[in-house]
Structures are given as structure tokens and as C-alpha cells.
Amino acid sequence: MRYIILLSGENIPLARAELKSIIEAQGSSIEIVQDFTRLLMIDTDKKIDLSGCAMVTEASRFLSDIDYIESIDFAPYRNIPINVRVIRHESAKDIDVMKIERRIGHLFYTKGAKIDLDCPEKRIRLYIGDGWSYAGELMFLSSKEFAKRKASLRPFHMPVSLDPKVARTIINLAGAKAGDSILDPFAGTGGILIEAGLLKCRIFGIDIDKKMVDGTITNLKHYNISNSMIKEGDAFDVRQMFGESFDAIVTDFPYGRNTKDADVRNIAERFLEYAPSIIKKGKYIVAASNFSDLKIPDNLKLKNLFEIYIHKSMSKWIYVLKA
Image (cartoon, rainbow, N blue to C red):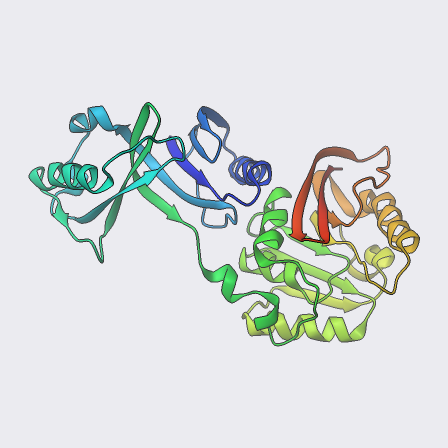
């Protein structure tokens, strides 16, 4: 299957890694056929589902180079309401967007499609850059639901919490899929667990602060997430508390203005030493940290390290580790 992928612009390396992880978690390979930074043409050996993606803006099933679009099979579009929209790449020189949209729209109309600009059943995308142009049928459009789940809109929230898109992204980097067991050993207000629950994962959370545990449970109920086990306790007592190994560990290591950097670093590095004993072999630990140089134990392999911008005085580092 060939797809055209438009990545979110916030962090291209992170977006690419998320895309690759999601596709591979579905048992498919991925080959980049054309690379225009934010826009990729990829081949996969299976049909893919990107509905859980956080950092893909949209994805289309490849139809044709626009120059050869008359040769495609128009039968699937007969009597179907469609619209046509140009997605202009930053490299594109001066183009008449409306003229191109009208021309291709008219072609589909002459082949039996109906034009409906407001409520189309199918959407045709025309991706145009400098010296290249591709047509695709839109298969995935990024959700606006992340904004509706920002921390300040939850029943229980604290001033510092991972953005829902970042939380979803790091879950995807762990290769998590429906039915997998996901642990957040420093659950906080439950932002990571909310996103994992919405992906139909089995979620397990611990926090040493009862207020956080109660708040997480409240937030999960707010989003109708029930497949969960949230406990008050120490992150280093996971095996005693849950009695199982996990398919993924995803967390935002604790930090705070009133906590010494040395103490925060020590907690993170101690947990990385402990983590291999509670995760299945070959599975992933993905952790956000304020430190770019955490010590990685020998029995974990650092696969990726990403920097993400939080605000002008703060960045976080995303560690992707394989057990």
C-alpha cells in the first residue's frame, strides 16, 4: 500500500519516529519512497490504521501523479459526493490553487462523481511541491480531541502536566496497541494513562501521593476509561503490587521546584535500573525527563533520544529504551 503522509510541524524527528512505531506495531514494514521533510510518500506491506496518531496531520491513499490522474479507476467515485483540495508544500512555486482544484474537480465530475464542498463522502487531496505533484484520497485527518483533553479541562489537574499530544506520542513510541498492558509508575494526574486508556490498553498506574491517585481515578472516570488499576504506592514496589510484567512502561519522571536536581536524577536512574525486572523482554520503556544525560543501565538499549520544547525556560528529553 502506498500513502502520502503530512506530518505535524512541531517536531519532525519525533513525528517520524511515532509514524514508524505505529506502523511496525501493526506488523507492517515501512519504506520511505519520497521524502519532502514534513511530507512523505511511504510504502507499507499492509493496510495501516493511523487513527491513534498524535503527530500526523493527515494521510492519504496514493492515487497517482497529478499529471496521470486521468488513468486512475474512477468507478469508486461514481455518484459519490467528493471535494478536492490542494495541500501546498513549502517548496511550491507560485501556483493557482483554485484553478487546479476546479480542474481536477471537473475531471472527477465528468467521470461520474458529485461535487460537495461542505459534506463530502470522500476527499481528494492534491499535494503539490517544486517539481512534483501527487493525488491521494484522504484516509486520516488529525483529531481536534487532544485540545479538548488538555490538563486544565480535566476534573483534577495540576499546573505542570504533559500535553495530551505528547502523552499520546510517547505511548505510540512504545509500540503500544489495544490490549497491551501499560504501566505509568509515576502517574501524577493520569495524563499518560488517559491516552493509553483511549487506545484500549490495559492501564496500570502508581503514585506515592494519595491525592494524585484519587485525582487520576477521577480523571479516568471522566473519560469513561474503566480497564485500569491505579494504586497508591512506591514505583519500586510494582511487582509486589501488580504481580505481572508489562508490555510497555511509559512515564514522565517526577520533578518539582522544591526537589533537588540530584534527588530527581537519582529517582529516574534508579527506576531505569529496576525497570527491566518488570517489563517483558524486547519491549519498550519510554520516559520523559528534564535531563538529557541520564545514566542508562547495561541491560537497556537506548534506541532514540528526542528533545521537545515545553516553553521558553523548559525542554524535556524523551528516552526510548528497549529491554
